[in-house]
Length: 292
Ligand SMILES: N[C@@H](CCC[C@H](N)C(=O)O)C(=O)O
Image (cartoon, rainbow, N blue to C red; front, side):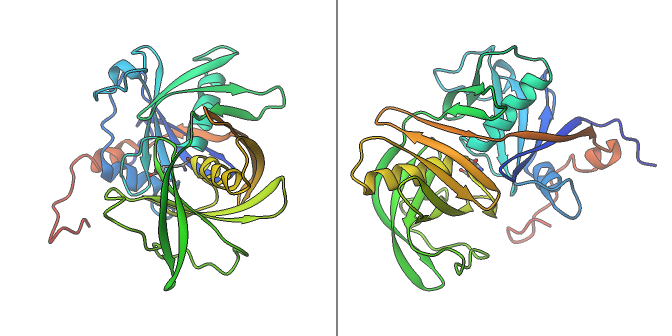
């Protein structure tokens, strides 16, 4: 019989970009790609776009970026396909919500370690959560193909890679398949944003995330999109409300940094089935490179 004494989990989201949060204060969880895929499976698991392991930076078991202190909490982020990513803008806001709610940090701003370096997060008086995302680095132009139609794209780095396409009406885009991109430029994959300018203050965005597929929001993607739109408008810095399928976030970009503000909620907490979790311990054998 299944006993529910496995690892603790929480479920949360930021504008419907959803995550399983796994508290791991002693750095004991063995979070394999198989376990991540099982947790994120929307039929056989809890269902999520990604997993956020909450671990002290010093216990991560990986080389830390130079600016991450060993005593900061670290967001060990994984995409739904089990791949590791450097940063997640919605994830880090949900992560900070967990730290505050669990009493692991007190009020004020909290530094969170990520593979892209430290990101500082603040809970606003209205309950929204803001993260300082650092500078958005524009790398140059490339192209993206959707259903055989090629569009020009701007490469923007937020610690993780993005290609932003400024396009028109978004509702007809079929993002159920991976859009084409230049694999020589992005050998590890890329997040791809499609952006429609609504007016001087508002943009609409859809996104195909690396390691996930189409999601209802992507925090780093909203910052990349705003950076591209502000640049196209000939501005040095600027703010936009970014309308995604899961809600609205507010983004500000300047030449030296950027901020992302929006809702971040936790909706459930529980324990994983111990037998289920243990059954996922060993990676299954792969046949011709295909994992069962
Ligand atoms: N949803 C995220 C981005 C998650 C990582 C991304 N899929 C990648 O592989 O870089 C966000 O809110 O930023």
